[in-house]
Length: 374
Image (tube, rainbow, N blue to C red; front, top):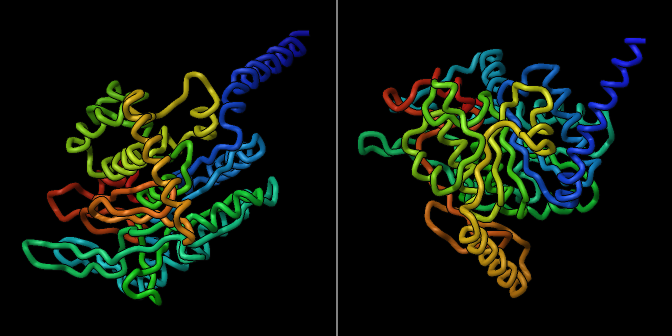
């Protein structure tokens, strides 16, 4: 008898979860979510399977998910395996042509294939895309200055343009796009560049006019005073985060910069959540409590500014016959797409586009701890 009662209790709890999720399912139906996938969530077989289930669930309840992935650990392992040693100039990692071949092979040929295959186990909706495909991502080669000297860091780039047309077409066809962050070199279109996955996800979210940017990390969220675990916060306004950025750990700062950039350019909410917890994405999106840290607009003023920006972009698009393409640069630039985007660049990048600093600017251990090396 007790076994039957226990089973009924569990069933009731499941029903309560579904009822709690219903308002959110109704609200987000038809909305686009851009999900940055990286860190330990990509290494554990259990977490990989849970992530695939979560994205498929989002799709089946009417949400339009787009997955943007990194793959730093996998790239590092392959570089070791083929005997390519990392080269450093001025304390910064250099991505040589040989290294870039490995980056391209691992991100698009291995990591992306695994993600697509895992998702298609549940239903055949996932389709892989590289930033090279249909001009999705265009980047400019990064040139770093060390002690007043210009340093060539190889095939590392900063995104200057997002053309979301290919993603939009896949979404409209009922597919789940999975994007690897390799971009076309704007100066040498026959070459490709490695770009930071956090920055790419943020730029794609803006270009698509996404409702949410969700970033999976290796920490529980944003800590105001790391490593004090009690300083974890569940929400923060864009203006407060802007003031806080200079004090953040070198690993967490690029993620929060990417989240802030998306919110500033019209994405209503950016979520930074712990990818080490199975189904953390569903807990964040469909429960009242949520987990992780959400960055949001600063009330009505910020919302009005973002809406005005979207209206201006829509009007500009109506007057142009060219394909939508969001243009990005170090300074404010014109945009032919979903929104104007400003990207501020700094440092150099590792094999997955993760920013790597010279000694004294943040150790590799710090970056790994805060989930940057993904």
